[in-house]
Length: 565
Image (tube, rainbow, N blue to C red; front, side, top):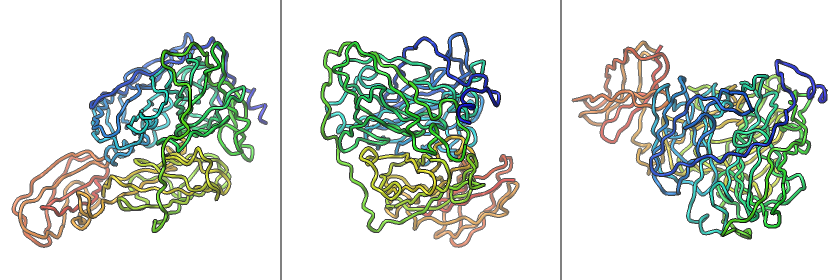
């Protein structure tokens, strides 16, 4: 069956094998930095294959986006201009930000609008990325090319003797499986991925100097895993995972990256001047059930699955004037959170029917924008036990924070998984992962954080959940000063009565927020009495959907969700 799938034209895919073209220089994304950064997401066309204009989406260009350079501790404002003619979001994948700044499905950017989140950079030096996260449309917008890198730099990383000349010995490389039809248009599905792009080009070639070089690898695919390694099994050293440095470099000849995962590797090219190296994906060595390798129970495989193929050619030239020639022996000290007194949480993946390879659930539910799976409290340590009853591995991602992996299938994870991460692969067939996390910096009683599978068709299909992190008593908004609004009728047409037990008389402020967190209206309510008050609120003309009403009197805050029919 496998050989037939790899040779036959089926399901409307006219090109099942990857055509050979002259190698294309790998482009290096431009950079943006500073305290104010502008991004415009827009449609365009890109010549990915010679002579073909492929319809694409990009930030500040036709395909992919610039690399955003941030310094730990700085304040940054990101002005995102939406020129797609459709709703989108931008998720700052891996960054420690509040739910309102996270770019989740709730924080939508409407067509022709600008979203301007502003936040301090609280993260460690590492490689992060940004991409759309609109529920039901994430996969389409990412497949068309909406994605870009974020580099965070800090003093600890800067003190190490590491390559950091951008584009020369410190190179961002995003690898993406995609499906192209006969007209070389990107197809809005990924079951039969028939090409691999690196930084947006097929069959790319990269020129690197004969010295220690740092490659920042991102699997930006919607579905499949890569198993990176050199054709001659040359050793390389991983120095960072998703969200920070490892304790020490880890020597590897293979590196599996799931969709959404990142890794920074050092390759010593000091003795390779004049040579050509081939970076490959060894799909034949992927564990069974990992997309890109062999699937269980005869699941459909694409033309590149369970094969070994080249993803990048590296030509090694002369060293630079001030090359890095050695690899540090130590990098940082990761302090894993203590499990003592931690709350525990169970999250389970399942499929219906049990052997399905497309219909997945988290805790036996599909994602509902109006349903919060659980609540926790800011600064509270939690241990999450994640189990996978399906026949496919799933990369699990949490928003707005990092975690540490404690166990995979009951065993201590390998050294290159012991750093700060925000994506972890949960193995198939009763596989399990145990992780520990703490949402230290932000609490929001209204807007949630997300957790989900980072296979985008699974995410768009509902393999996602959300949770609220309530502020601590010491936070700006004290939980003891919060209360609930009683709203009637609810659902309603726009004329509502809100009821709250006010601790004292005086003026109050009533605000209305959309479900995506945008402030729509503020009203001053004068001369309210103490005790239980019934306050009419006319919001006729609102589009059908749900909204947040917040009433503030002094330090007392009341909030509630209202549904407009």
